[in-house]
Length: 278
Image (cartoon, rainbow, N blue to C red; front, side, top):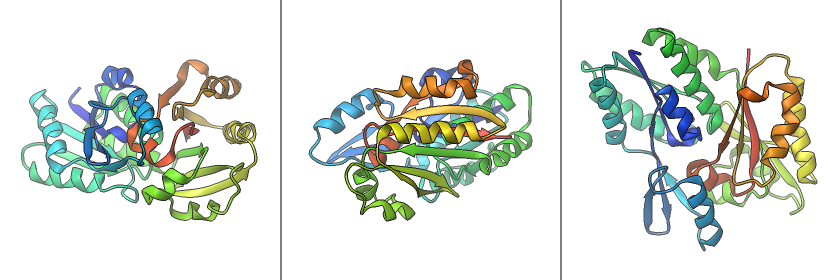
């Protein structure tokens, strides 16, 4: 494979899948008060959710430095890659894309690096990275891999059900979802990533109804090509998997636990779907 795919740790891909496909993951950093930790290296999802439950302050996240991306790009070149496709979480949510582009510019003339703003996050981003890696493994050149990913941007959906909006509010990522802030505590707010920003969805009274909304969205689509289920340490993720099974081949469903980057803003028990349409 001469094209290497790189993304960032907000992709929430299971690490074994990323390793299998040869996807490089550049970690963001997470701060609990004055303590700074590296996502994936210092914080697995399990450790993150355990720490969040006992922490008096909400964690904060920061984009990787350009140097972190440069290291990943150089490693790809040293491994024999002729080019790198780097696809990152939405530029409307993080400075990660800007860091990746700075790194790419610093390596101009050494290796061809293309940086793509996914306009998505979590497994919406993860599905783009896996599609790119599979395209590269099939022998596509860098231009073809870039074209493949860019074509997926407008066809990728990410929808989630939150137990609380407190994490989004304090993290400053709430965007248009601020309309949900006046909801009573019993409401399970739905959110959706639209054009790279977090926007409000329906306001539902129970978690069961929120789960049904997720299933209904999937069932309403006639041409889903890839699908993933994302969750923030949710105890009922298997319930959602079983509910979606009639609408998408079970063996092709990717299940990923939200890590520190997304989980810091959505909170525990978040559950959702990411999928791509033809």
